[in-house]
Length: 240
Length: 140
Image (cartoon, rainbow over all chains, first blue to last red; front, side, top):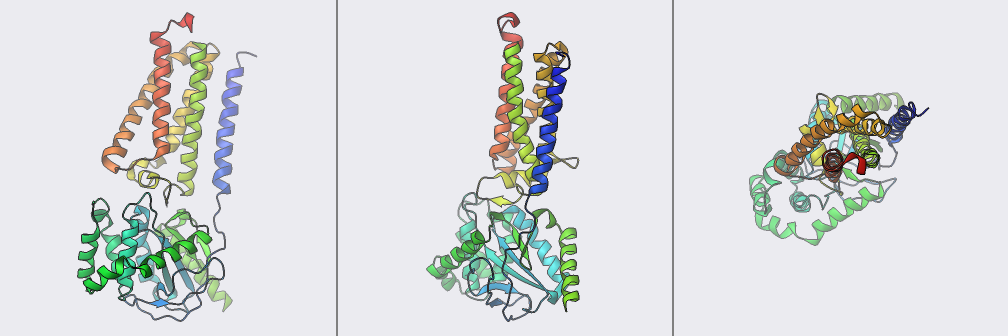
């Protein structure tokens, strides 16, 4: 018995390890139905600041008007909670742009601020820069620059001059931008988006909701994400 | 040496739990997402977190399970298993040093779970080396 006891112990530990890994992998929540649905009218076009009313049927409302692009009657509504300093958000940004290019007016996209401070020391400054740009109708232009150039600013000690140069680049009134970036209105918008995120159970970024259901993180790569959109479109087609 | 091997087996279970947690989080995508906790997302979403298609954390879990198996066999008198512990742990230690270097100087973010694993590996190597080469086997 003593000769085989160590092997029994080893097998038991192996079984427990594999069993717990299997259980935890399977029990990870995938698609809780929590996010709000869009109900509002929308200006269209990717360049429009496209701020519009969104009403949540679950979770508290985010900042209003929200940063949204795409038609209000689009069959697929995507709501992203993002952090401009978060590398996976930077990876997801071109994927979402690609999907918007592929599916056109079948998609409506809303971006919600969810800066993670800590660990991202410049996330709040980046969110403020985007919101200040939004007050001049250029949220999406600043949003794009912040993600496209994430690697160049995230390691800098002081990002304010960098973001100010972005403001100049996209044609903002820089004096107004500098006033707005630290304003209560901007901070309140970020706070309100964060509050909505917390009410929906958002714990990290990017967290994406599609027609009110959270998209599992592993389905954010373009191949899987495209399939999810196609399924939503198919479902919307059968309902009509 | 028996106490040394029992300690090594218990420590390797801690390392196994840590590596398994990271593997599960990696497979479900949770640690790759940014969270308020740490720089784990930066570390675990880096290209160094996957080796030949396998999550590095999963390879770590396999390594800790190997150490546990060898230590358990050594407790029950399998001498070869005890002898194999030192080279296996040395290899793990070298990999841990490399990973800490990557976190400090390449990725420039630290993940506390990865640091915990490096600490466990270091402690394992230390006690096994002390047990084998410093203390007299009869006195342990």
